[in-house]
Length: 256
Image 1 (cartoon, one colour):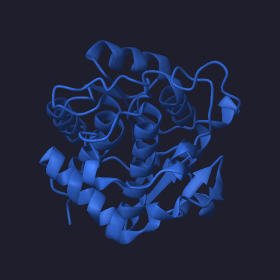
Image 2 (cartoon, helix red, strand yellow):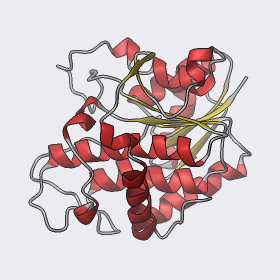
Image 3 (cartoon, one colour):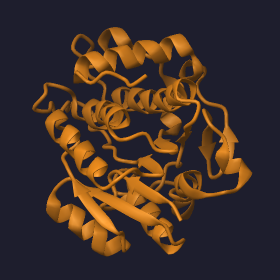
Image 4 (cartoon, one colour):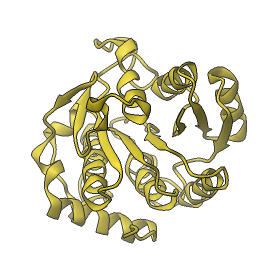
């Protein structure tokens, strides 16, 4: 039985992964943006505990990490939380960051750095990560003309890069990225063509399975099968540039 924390688990793939892990007999901690959403997620999933925090806020993200650590060490963390994009709308946060970058990249980095190191880490990426490169010089879109779809794709590259960087820097931790497919969640939309039932299973499998195939590290999976990632994601120098940039933006150093 594993203890697993799932971010962004009030609905969608996060809630589905939490439910599956509970059904498998694991202890699960769910997360919602507010205390009400977190409690609702706990009731819907059957989880053991719930924590809350708005991941668009650096202050609340730090507080969320403290809540998780107060519950004791997790065996696995699934970094599921994310937001989609609207073209022409940055939605700047209280910290002056584009919403999609703040939630999908910065909060994921901060939680990775501040939550007590688990045995396994799972990061939600996307097939959209293939079409972009790391733009660390303007990572927060302060100079470029805004493109919501490109900004989103870049955050999904960041998530894969974080997974592979963790696998390299923390060899005792199994860290992997997941492409869940384009599925019909609130984010994906009703017309999404991929199998919704497969969208949550890989991250739960990587978090808790004893199968040898689930004990890989530094890899990208889709529907429990290995996939090649964007080569940029495996570039150690680029990973280090990303981590340095995120440490500077968040004020949270990456633990050695």
